[in-house]
Length: 191
Figure (cartoon, rainbow, N blue to C red):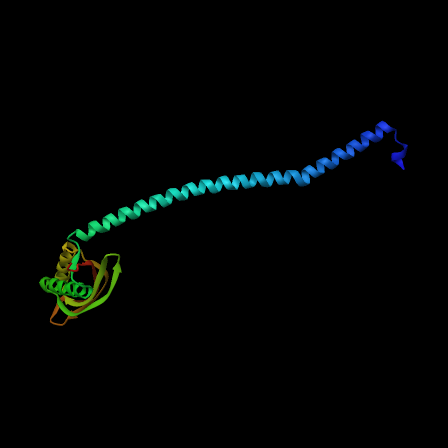
């Protein structure tokens, strides 16, 4: 064998070289990956801490926004823009009566009025009605203007208009109108 023919200093140098190569392979194969994993874990932990800080700030802002929203809802409850009723059914009936009155004052003929299901939004409810009307164009414009200026505030969810020409008045067509109108209401119970 070749190792037996080498002089002792050259054999020791060769053994030392093999030992250094083995240590380097162990370092590259075992120790360095462990260090890399640790550094990667530390980087992930730092990133998670940064995300946690941002999430805490977002939660804080969300809580502040929720508090402001609660305060605004409280302010809304005392505004005149709400129907005030003793019960949910009365709120729907009040809206229906108010819409029929507006339509008649505008010169529109109410063909039907139907209360729609109420929706609860915290302390407030949304009362809604579906109206079927017959009117001419000036009456419709007047009705829409009255609804726009109305207090409590009215919101038109949906409107459909079809035109019918009357034989003896072709210049004044009749409009068949179907609309869904809603208003916020607060049920006030006697205490």
